[in-house]
Amino acid sequence: MSAPCPALTRFNQHFAEGIVPLWQGPGWNADMALPYEALDAQHQPMPVQRYRAMACARQLYLFSSRIGQPGAAERAAALFRSLQRHFHDAEHGGWFYSIDADGKPLDRRKDLYTHAFIVFACAHYWGKVREGLVESALNAALSIVNDQFARDDGLFEARLAEDWSDLGSGPLQNPQMHLAEAFLQVLAVREDPAVQQALLQLCGALQTHFIDPEHGLMLEKPRGALDNWFEPGHQFEWFYLLDTSPLLRGTPLHSAIDRAFAYAELTGVKGSAVLSMLTVDGRVLDATQRIWAQAEYLRALALRPGSEAQLRAQLDALLARFLHDGGWHECRDGAGVVSRHDMPSTTPYHLATCLEGLQRLAN
Image (cartoon, rainbow, N blue to C red; front, side, top):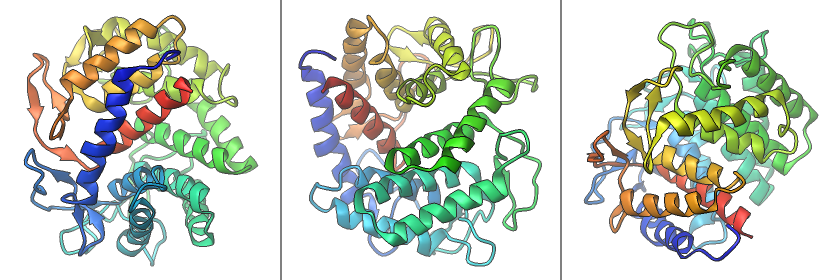
C-alpha cells in the first residue's frame, strides 16, 4: 500500500478500540487469569466448557505485540504465568491441550498445534521483554517439539498421548504450518542454527509429502490420503510466511505456493469471499466464509505485484462484511448470511498479524 489508506486506518482503530478491549474486560476471567474461549454478541462469556493452552498462547501473542499500550504488559505477564500454571504437565513435560472450568486437566493429550503456538508466543514475548524465565519456557517448548513430535521424514506428529506415546495421528498440514511460523518467529528474535535447520528440513518435507504437483497446492493431509482437500486461506497464509522470509523465499516450496496462490484465487475466492474447503480439482466442499481466511488473503495480497486495487477492495470488503460496532462476525455461510454469532478469543491473533503485515508493508 504505497499511499495512505483510510480503510487501513479504520481497521486499525476498530481493532484497537473495539476488539482488543473485549479481551481486557468481559473476555477476561480474572479468577483464572485466562481469557474466556468466546464471547457472545452481547459481550457475555459463552458457557465455560474448557480453556485451551493454544488460546492462552494466542492471547499472549496479542498482548505482547501491543506491549507499549496501557495494561498490555501486565496482561501478557499474567497470560505467560497462566500458561505455565494451568497447562504445563509437571510429570511428563509439555503442555496439556485443555483444562476444564475448574482448572483441572481436561484433554491431557499433547498437540503439535498447541506446542507450535507456545513456541510462537514465547518467542515473540521474549523478543519484547528478554526475561530469562520466558526464554527458558521457549527453549523447553523447542526441546519438546524436537524430542517428542519430530519424525524421521522431517515432518512432525500432529498429536501424541499424555505420556508421549504414539496415537497414530501422523502429520497434518495446519500444525506444520504454525510450527514453521513459530520457527520463523524464533529466528526473528535470535540466531538459532538448530531452529533454522529444522525449518529448512520441515519445508523440504512438506514439499515432498504435502504439495500437489499439478497446482502447487498445500494439501491438508499427506499426498495420496483419502478424501484430501485444500483450503484457500492456508495457501494465502503459507504464501505470506514464505514470501516474507529471506531464508525461505525462492525455495521449491515458495515456488509451489506461488502457483497455488493463483489457483486458490481462481477457484476459492468468489467476489470478495474466501471459501473454506475445495477438492484439488476445484470443486467446493464448504463455501463458509471465515474472517481468518479473509485476513490471510488480505495480508498476502499486499505482497502480490499489481494487486493494489484488489487489495483496497478486499480491505473494504473485510470492514463491511466482518467488522461491526460490537466486534466482528466470525463466519458467513455460502449465501453470505452470518452463521456464527460468537467471537472466539483466538481470532484477534489473525487480525493482529494481518494488521502487522499491512502496516509493515505500508511503511
